[in-house]
Length: 152
Figure 1 (cartoon, rainbow, N blue to C red):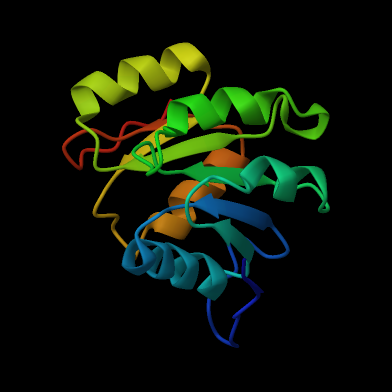
Figure 2 (spheres, rainbow, N blue to C red; figure 1 turned 60 degrees about the vertical axis):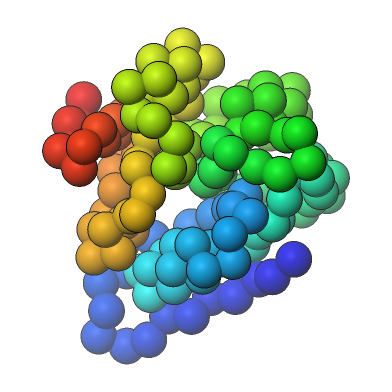
């Protein structure tokens, strides 16, 4: 569990005061996501394996967006965790974004059907990641396949 707001002067704060929760088992990926988001003003917390996510979300001030890896260890998937998160009162309509190396042609239709707010493939583009998350927070859906963005 980690929390930090690593903003510095002179950077665009697309996510100023936004609370972002990340579920990502790969430490390197999580650090890249976290750095990009914090540089844009976000407050970030995370769960590495998804095992404590529901407890964290229930016991903390609500987050503005949840970022989920779809392929998690210990028999848990981001799709299953999505359904668990949606049972929480404060998270019934919170944007949940899949950020995954899963095959986009399979993951995107399933994510759309479940009600995810978008899909961003790994590796992310660090220079636009915060803008992508900000666009989702502004109510847009974002579905990226083969690194060609399509904003609806």
